[in-house]
Image (cartoon, rainbow, N blue to C red; front, side, top):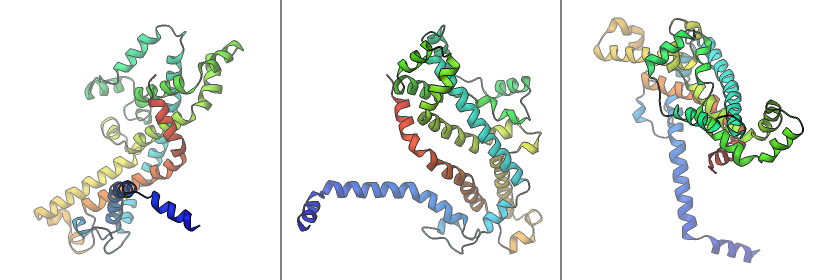
Length: 305
């Protein structure tokens, strides 16, 4: 036993110590910003955030209470959840199917259409033409303006296509075709089940994008407040706090009110940190369930060959 301990100590080199220190420092740099936001969200909002370091001061849930009491919060959260679930499922299905089509050698003009699709990654029509297109299709001020425009992601399609070409033997599809299976049967019964790692990867990408999106709400869904998302509602809450803070600095007592001058009040910094925690926690809860697929999916899907 003593010999084992001695040999283990002899194996610990200076390089191991340096690597451990570097990894610990890197871990700290990754975790500390999130921890700083957390302690800022549970500290007294009247305490300047610059004075916070590692521990919260005057711990309170006032920030969360005020933000969660915002009018229409539950409805907005329902819209965000609905657009995230619907948008993710539809995007994963359509993106995977398009990627599968581009792997079929018998598809007419396959390389030409693939190049045309790739070009859309680098070129955009701009905000105004996009707005006019959405208007012509009747998408403005509807729930589908959150879903349809982003239903197919070219970048995700390239990842899935590469995974299908490098991670799944082509002979599987050919064998099924010889047995009488059509393209849809091969796709749903063979390709989809075997593509779970890359599908979980792009599902995480799409879900994060859908959950955090608020700009499309502000531009394309201004006339229907019933379809406001959680992020856009919190964005408006932050703007209100900024206006109150600006009024307080300029001495506008009428706008600020006596209550804001005497009692604990929300500040733009406290709202910003509280909002960050509220919109980040759901994604952090989902990520562990997809982590085991994420590394394999992104590694195989990124290999070009």
